[in-house]
Image (cartoon, rainbow, N blue to C red):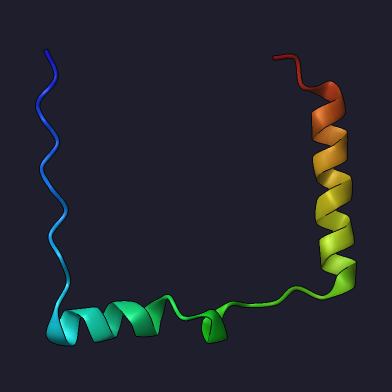
Length: 52
């Protein structure tokens, strides 16, 4: 039998500020069009050979 999952604690104060700073949209790394196209090509080739 599985153990029950504990509730996630609410972040307050300094911990909340650090969390928001680390996950802010400003820190998201944007890929250039060439890298994005290469990723899409790789995904398409993997999807073509995948057997699910």
